[in-house]
Image (tube, rainbow, N blue to C red; front, side, top):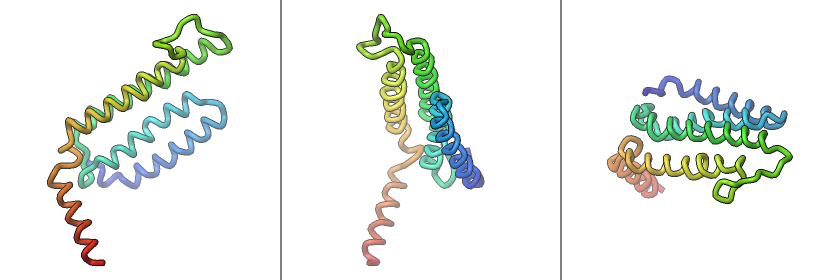
Length: 147
């Protein structure tokens, strides 16, 4: 996916999403604000993994799209169970965690981190090949020598 010609648009969308997240949070629409943060983070990741303005379609599907789905499900379930148990002590926990916080722990933190880490490892040449890394190191080395 080529994003080279759309980078300005992406930055504008990122700015708008930041405003949406802030307004949603300050007006009490927390789940909506967290869900708006998912495309915000996804756009940052797209900009970060693009090589020459191109994002690998494999990398876009896994891990990025899977990560986004995990985060959305986490926030929606946390909101649902938060409302369900508002002002009431639940009669059960999920592995010792309150039902409204369990999706955050298992999908957002653990699931999200495992998905991104595994994806970055398995598809490392899609975003930073050894050749690209060596080229970067040589540029840094050249910059040090100029000083």
